[in-house]
Length: 505
Ligand SMILES: [Zn+2]
Image (cartoon, rainbow, N blue to C red; front, side, top):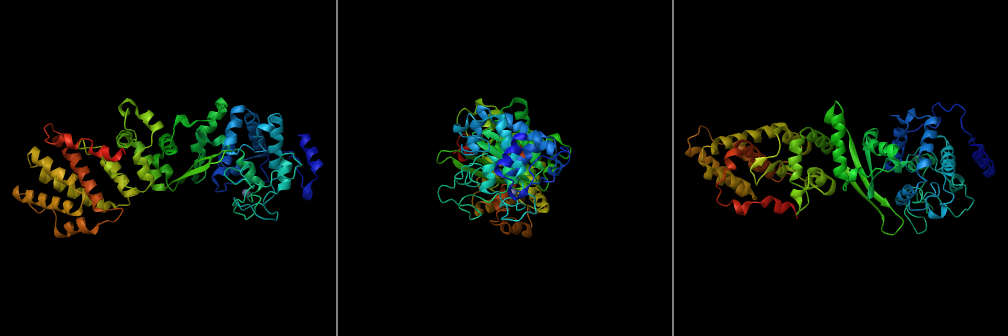
């Protein structure tokens, strides 16, 4: 540590600050830690909290920071980590000495010194100056200070905060866009810059890098714990259990986390998440980020669906984007390797109702309970509407079950094939006629109900008549599956795989 003091003396103590370490190393920090709302900075903080077994940023002590610095200093000098870091920090990060030209200098001691210096450069919150564009609480770090952290007197580098030391920023060499309108780099403070150096520990490496940022921020600890534990145990970065798609992995984790805790899916109440799937490589075209927003309703639905895992598997099994060899693969293999239309539609705010039943087998994939949760919480249907549709479905069942099997199937097929509103309407007329023929008491629908069902919902995104059709089919399959799936079916051949044809393209 004395080396650093010497360096500080060498550079001169700018503004007379005392960079020496606090004597009482267990005391909590005068530089209090906090969440920032920035995915990469918060991921770095998450890593430090997990390494030190702390839950809240304000609980971090100087001793904890020392421990975290010690941990990465040993890790980041390993060849496979250098390779990974070069995909996050554009191959040139002088703080972490990522550049191949720095290979000889790259030792745990040097790395520890850099990070220690950077940490001690964190200014107090009341220091004046241009504020950090990320946390807004501390003044930005200057190029002069940055050079101090990397023990360089070369004024040409680093310019300021660029993509070399902070992921996905520009290079500063060409006219880049920086929020702060500073052509040399982004205005970022030493606190945020320090934390982002720890971000690679929390990353799941799936070709590109995966970070899941949540609100409330504390949820990140549960989501990224697996990555940190993996590094702690093996020294190697987690490859997200070989998952290829970030949403598949994240949804799997959501279900696993919910299962572990008593509150179950309620754990995700008032929580939202954003997936960042990115690469910040050195070669052109390699700087890219895919951002996937996961609204609260979807999070809660996925967690809830995990409680009905057999149903949820059946639903997902209708959506895998794979044409051949599908039958040879297990659910786990499909989940790891392929995109799923159910996920895609959910994240695109499209209805997944048709996946709740299997048109080919005329069977349902889930309980009414799961369907109800989806309709109410995700589609925004009100419960009373849902009960009304369910009731109409029961009345239809009560009517058509009086028919012999072949007529029953033909009638249901009419509803299945209703793709225009008038076709949907004529289905009701047909059922009404059956009702009269079979002398069932009361009409199928009152005039008001008929009007409500067919016109009130119209083309409303949430409750269009197509939603009603899908719900009615669900109810009919649920109640009459045994009779509908009977053997003799005149045109079974033609209709088989009808659903898959549409979805597998
Ligand atoms: Zn900041």
